[in-house]
Amino acid sequence: MSAGLKGSIGYIPPEYGMGGQVSILGDIYSFGMLLLEMFTGKRPTDDKFTEGLSIHQFTAMAIPDHAMDIIDPSLLIERGDADDDDERYNNDIRARPVTSYQDGSPICQTRLEESLVSVMQIGLSCSAISPSERMLMDVVVNKMKAARDSYLNLAIAGRAKFAL
Image (cartoon, rainbow, N blue to C red):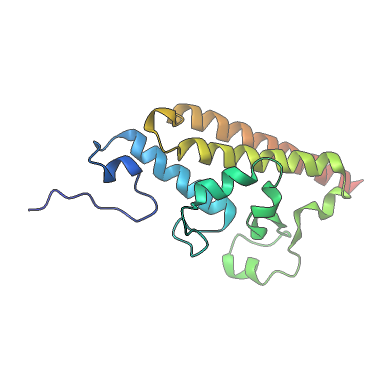
């Protein structure tokens, strides 16, 4: 029977490769990598990440001033009033850039960027190389809720503007 460590390349924390003990902090690292993947649209094993560049470094170099340059464009699409059915969403001609209902207001754009940057900063903190530098999960949950609330307040404000 093998006691070897198993996992997906790109998501296993670096300390495991150096004989470190499996811990909750390793799970937090994997969660951080997943957040970075979701928000950049790139996998940690993407061909772009060569010669020492990682998804963590790629994101860290862009945050905060160039976050919109690396964000997955599919996150900036607002759905119409379609069902939750994925196929219908994918074919929904009412899908449009999320800023379309906000009249291009610099304030709304800034708030959207701030929400996205908040989540990517959480991903960066969780995927820190050193386990002692990683954000603990209770803090992650609170920060994710704050980012969600900020985004939802932005969306509600934008829809109210659109309705006027």
